[in-house]
Structure formats: structure tokens, C-alpha cells
Image (cartoon, rainbow, N blue to C red; front, side, top):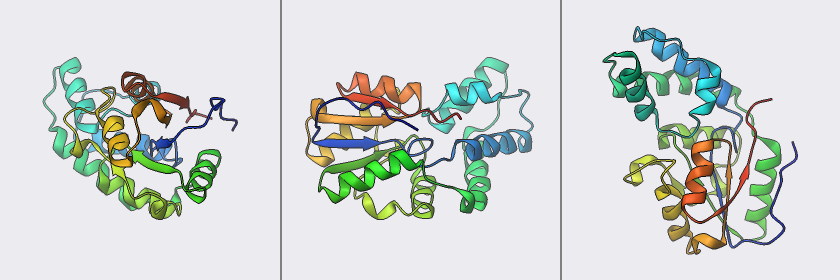
Length: 197
């Protein structure tokens, strides 16, 4: 994988987790599918829809699908079941090498780095642990810490604030359009990481 990096230095680097640092998107799709089937969802959620929704918080996704299909499936229950299924299978995860290598390089250089993920901490921490990157990041932002998830800029702005770096001096690494939109809304440059092979 070749990353199209801007030709300038930044003071802070913010990484999405799933599909960006961790090659976890296929596993997440399987977890979603398993949870929807378990809950008797009246829809068939395609891989294309799944990837188009990358970065959007789980419960929001379920609420939007409920609305679209006239269903009333409990977003919390779908989320909890999905997390449980994912947690039982995460030992197979691998890093997205090009991005993980950059994170290690920035950490070694003493740069400010953080994670801002649409997933809950209960998914982000063990995923980073499995691929050996958890100790790199003192700052991990998840939807529980902000009012609005991606594509709103809240998570990236909080990450910048906690790193002590102005938004315009931050570079975001993202695999989802919602995350790219959030970075733009935060006034930050971004690098798109393709999570589909």
C-alpha cells in the first residue's frame, strides 16, 4: 500500500483505528452480519453499504437502518452482541502495515499522535493490543467522549485539544468517507487509507 502523504510536516497525527491502523474491516462486517441475523433484522446489509458507512457509530447505523426498513431493532442490543462476537474473533487481526509503520515512526520521533475511532473503547483497545500498537497511544478518542460522532468534527477536535496541537497542524489518517468529512470539517488535512483490497 502506498500512502499519498502531504508534502509538509505536521505537529499532530490522528489515526482512525478500524481499517486504518488495524485490518479489521472484514471482521467487523462479519460481526455486523452475525448480529443482524441474530436479531432477525429484515434487511440484508451489503458489503458496499458497510464500507460506505465506515466510521459512523454502530447505534446510529442501526437506527438509520430501522428507519429505512420500518423496523424496531434495539441499537444497544445489536451493538453489544456485535462487540461480543468481534471480541471472540479478534485474535486473527493484523495491522495495516504501511499505517502502523508510520505511527511507530512518529512515536519514535516524539511526535504527538492519537487515535480517534468510531468504535467503542471496548473494541479499540483490544484491537490495538492484538497488533502490538496499544502502548503507542496515550490519547484514544471514542464516540463516548463527544456529543457527535463522525462525520462531525468533534472527535478530531478533541484529539487535537488533548495533544495540544492546533487543528490546522494536524494530519488525519482515515479509511472512511465519514472520517475524511470529519477531518475536513475540523480544518485538518487528511490521508485516505483504502481498507478494501
